[in-house]
Amino acid sequence: MKQVFGYPESLQNRPNHYCPGCTHGIIHRLVAEAIDELQVREKTIAVAPVGCAVLAYNYFNCDAQQAAHGRAPAVATGIKRALPDRIVFTYQGDGDLASIGMAEIVHAANRGENITVIFVNNAIYGMTGGQMAPTTLPGQKTTTSPYGRDTATTGYPIQVCEMLNTLKAPAFIARVSVHDPKNVMKAKEAIKKAFEYQVNGKGFSLVEVLSTCPTNWGMTPVEALKWLENNMVPVFPLGTFRSLEEVSK
Amino acid sequence: MAKVTFNEERCKGCELCVSVCPKQIIHMADRFNSKGYRPAEVIEQDKCIGCAFCARMCPDVVIEVYK
Image (cartoon, rainbow over all chains, first blue to last red; front, side, top):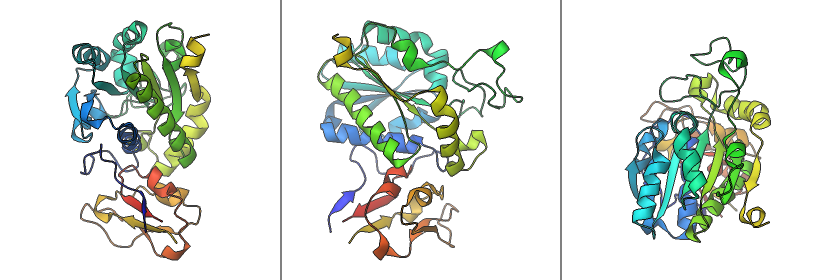
């Protein structure tokens, strides 16, 4: 019998600290598989965020740097410019990227830095205890919006892909989800493509991955995937927003 | 003929694999692993078609698939 699915080399063989059913684990594996398939593990540098994924450097089997809250794209810019032959990616949550790190991501994208950003959006602050994030859905209950997000005082969820797609420089922008096996495979394709863009020196690539937080959403992991599909996907439409073919038009 | 193996000590009992198995042959065991979770297991191994849906959905890379 031949092994058709196993542990990727770019993922360290140790248990992760994520809650049961947290989709961070799936997304870590997809990133590791993409790095394996492109055979760039030896020259890849990960930049970890602040948030649940702050310990990502314990899991990715490559060099890593942990950045201050939200500053991962700025740190990645520095690494990439100092060591242009390396493959540099950031792995950030929505609290990190869309709130405190909004300036860094917009300017890194606007400069067209040749880095890859994996943006994990679960519509809530996970590590700090389920507070409202910029990506929280209207009416969604969190510990800081116990009656549901009130759009009159707190605005609407920020659609990062759509916003960055207004810039000229980015080469690849896509939004994917991991709520069922089919979408997991699509997510894998998008992540691999984003890394390919960087390997080929095409410029800035970002993949937003819709994700769950069963613990802070107060659901079972299976219910959380259904909630993602039914509530988040309509607000954050899936698809490729920018690819090289469209840029060259 | 396909086979799936579970690294039971890594399993956190989230049941995502159970929810996506098209043959519905994955169940949660009655025993506990050392972390106190009930691990997922397959009893009717011969019904497995090796689609790897369970492995793709597993956040903890517990599952290996052989064909």
